Length: 402
Image 1 (cartoon, rainbow, N blue to C red):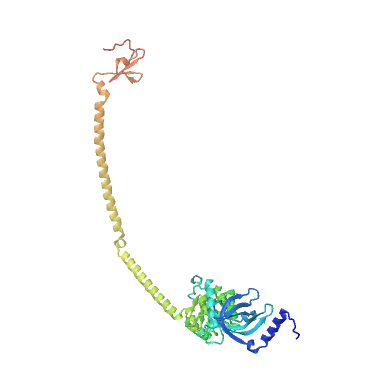
Image 2 (cartoon, helix red, strand yellow):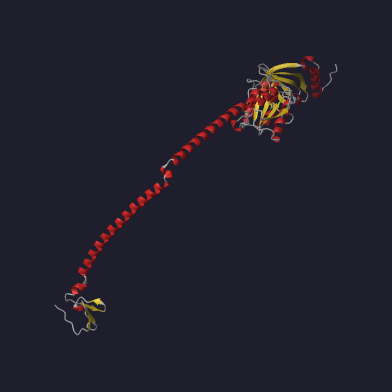
């Protein structure tokens, strides 16, 4: 018997042809848990292991299939995979080539929603500090929604009823389908690029999670977050929540409610203005009445009815003050006169001339009083002053007692 010798590559190719030719392995559905997951950074292929309690199989999902997934696979996630079994010839390893993947339990869209929500929340896009205030009285309302849905009619009806002075700037877009998210994001960017509105309402009516999915796309969330114009998100019904709701500056439960929030009620404003006008009229009337009463009080005052009376009173007060001033002057004069006379009497009593008039004389030498014989210089003239004159003398001799 002649048995051929095969290379490793030939045997791997042969085994691959057997597996590829088996119809039972060309379209299989497997359920298991993902482990060792790798998202190749260049090719964007997914490499992982699918396992259960009994066994494991290597698996790969190429980029063409991976990019259709609504969620990002993670380690520990239980999934159902549709694909085929074949051999990777280079390594001689059979593996699962995945064409589609769905979560086992929670739907793919729910997982994608939670994943994107966690990602954007970690980036701070939901922070209240990023929220912009909605203007109280906007003059232009931007509306981004479907031109054929009930939402646009509801929004326009409410805006027209509540505040017809505001201009509605409508940008029609698809609100579901593959092109919807891109159109919504583009509309938001155009509104901001042209400063075309004071506030923007973006949304649609209710539907399934698949219908609302455009508002869960990351590109829409990023467009809302970078909008300089405040954005009100109004997607679905009151119980529906989308990523757009979390990023927007304000979430409205329905499109109609968004229109209610976006503008004031002109009737309420009119009533408020009427109240202010009535209040102003009342304040003006009260102020006029007070000023009139004040003028009447002034006109009835004595000073206006008899102006000379005030002058006469002033004259009397002036005369009284003048008399008091003159009396005080006389009293001071008398007191000073008596004091002056007393001082003069004392000075006269102590005057040296009084002493000299009684026969005494005063001796001076060089203008100074000589009080003692010892102070006399016989070489100098002296002056003897009497009460009625002076005598110049020249001392001849001096004697000092004791």
